[in-house]
Structure formats: structure tokens, C-alpha cells
Image (cartoon, rainbow, N blue to C red):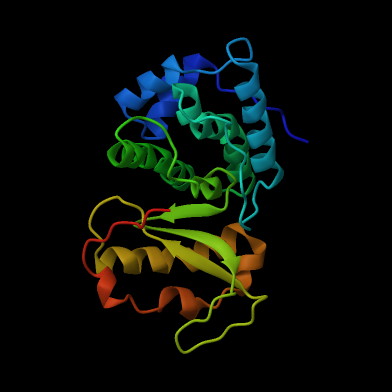
Length: 231
């Protein structure tokens, strides 16, 4: 049972915005377009529906589609998914605490929201969150940032070079956030942290083969600065 769609108390927002790396311009626009059932009941009900869809799969890692607003031309609609994720923040933080995820890992992971807001503005010329559906992984506790790289739980359904793991085996997908240069040393550090982290905090991950995580070679194409592909 969920607690229902509930946005954070506005008195907590300065701290929340800082933790989520949301810059001043986006903060102002998010607050200016803050939704309420009195202002727009239709979009409020859409927010409730999207929130419930997300939270029902809290901790899951299968593909998940979230319903969006009927129209995306208003400021509230452009920031629609920001409001969904703000409402889900307490739920995913509770899940992190239950799994004993370190606070620094929890907030480093969730702060990808701010980075993606910056990218949206750069790509589309105004504020909002329209190009980053993959943040559904972050706000249902499915992906974690460990140093330079992010890892999310999955199944070994894709063929690997020189290896064909059974499709039922647990596996980790690797993502490269847009947060600066990508060095072999930083990648090695992240890869070395991944298997112990998931074995400690996710019981099914104890079957992850260490060699596949820690010693998988870094392709030459990743040894220079890379930008995450648009999703």
C-alpha cells in the first residue's frame, strides 16, 4: 500500500533541490508551476496515476512506462515528471534505508535528476523534463551511482563477448552519466565497487560472477570523454 501522491512540504524544498542538484533557474520554474488539485484537477489526477504506477514497481528493474500529461505545453506539464519524482522521493529513500544503501550513494544516484534537467534545457531550449524517461530507474530504486559509473540490476538476456550467460542469471547494466571525463582509473574503481555493493544490498546479486563485473575490459572507445546517448 502506498502513501498516495503527496508533494514534499515546500519548507523542505531548498534542501531537497540542493540534494538533487537542481539549479536555481529550474527551482524557480518548478515552484512557479507547482501543481494543486484546485489549479488543475486533470493534471493532478494524471500525477496521481503516474506516481502510483511508479511506486507499485518500487525496487523493480523491468521496463516500465509511466503515463504522462495529456498536453505538454504548459509549465506544469513540462515539469510533470519532476513532480512525480519529488512525490516518490520519500518512498525511494525509505527503500534505500531498508536496504542499508549508504546515504552518499543514495543522493549521488538521485542527483542525476538535476543533470537531466540541465540536459533538457540545453536540448529543447526551455525548462522541463521530457527526454529522460530512464530516471524511472533512479526513483524506484533500480539503479545506483558508484563513483563515475551507474549500475542497474537486470537479467543476462544479452549476449556478451566470449560469453553467453543463462538468461535467468542476475546481471548488471552499466550507464555513463554526463558528469565529466571518463578515465580508465575511474571506470576501474566503479567496476571494483559494483559486485560487493550489490552482493551486500541485494541478496539475489550474490550470484553475480565477480569476473564479469570487476575484470571486464574497458573498450578503447570509452577511454576518452563520452556523453551518454539520448534516451
